[in-house]
Image (cartoon, rainbow over all chains, first blue to last red; front, side):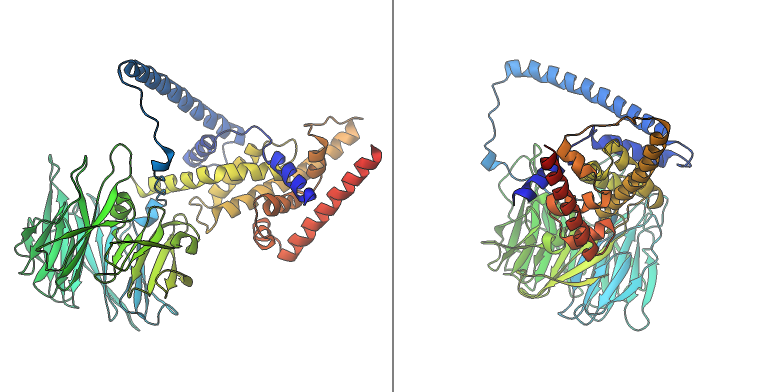
Length: 435
Length: 162
């Protein structure tokens, strides 16, 4: 025991030897190495000198800014009353860092159609019909500069994947994918859509009827122009249903005519397939310094579950909430949701309403929280991040209150989805596949 | 922001997160006269040149192995240098001095120090440490136990000499 302690102490002391500069030096060194046309040409000493000069300049800049800030704050402090020290017990943990933005933009979590059929959506779609034992990979040739924004799935091997481009890139398009022995992938551009438009929402009600919503910023204002497209043949052909609809995202349809969508912090309802929309106000948390926003709508007949949140102010994380209605939106009841607004906004799939009573959500540190009474009380479950062995940006989906899948992009720049499954409501998770 | 900027930001974030651990590892496996930060830089730049996106399941493990390889290369070079100096001058000068207990540790091979550090300080299992160092689990166990035996023998010898 003593020998091990002594050895540990010696190794610790050895680990602390040397002149230890900060990581900025290494990062600057890597940047410089990348900037060289041929890294082999520059000797190590030159690279290091360049890196040290960069760090030196950054250091001087930081010192100057710090001195200026200290001078300003000391001038203000003379007039202001002394600030109270925050009570450590009331300080909330810092939200986890959302890593790998290049990956998360392309990846969405698993979608379950039934206990046996499911999808994982990336540049390659993965489809299983045997509960995850075997997977069919269906590559989708998305143009390099396009960003995959939406995935939509229906039972029976039907999937649609929406992409958007930038100013000089292809306009928004929807890929129609049919899985099977000979999978097919067809790309259809939304007719007349501006190349700079973003595909904000994509939804299908059955194999044939679908809707796609594009948004385009209006120059010189903070508003967007939102156009609604529709298809009646499963996405083979699309047509502009109505230009300038008052909805921003979150399209959901039940059948050919009845649908819901989100516009800021209000819901919009249609009973004619999206041609006209009626504003529906939900219960919002008491007014604060920031405006609440709605993120997703889940429909169970006349029962609705809407997830939303209010962004934090003064560098504090925001708070999430849910609104429930059991009379098709006439009256609403407000509930609390675990997890910061910023997390839910980043990935709305982190809140799943399995049915009107059973909800699943990621909490503050991406621990899984469950409620079986429509958000009146929440219980923590096993940390999903631990089950997924770290990494960033997981997604999850439950098909019943007990059976659910979660997936995560492993790898720094290339997405290698790892899929795990629970059959006991999130108490335990087992690895299903590394795709 | 271009996809490349995002890529760079991702890689830099990973490096910044891994850096303190890599530095400690380099300090353990490097020679007495090698700056740990130099070893880390060499390993990272070599890795980035071959894998610009650090596209590994566990970049930390890969970089630790690269650091160990760099340390082993320097060890071989240093041994050749010492031999040459021994032939040319009567008393080769010591590059760095450490307390005697750390000198004993530094006499062990870099792989052995790496295995001891990974298992004793970092809390890895022998299987995990073996994967990082690049040997089998049984070889890792044997090497660690040989290293500990050697440290014990050195300690006994020092006590006798005192």
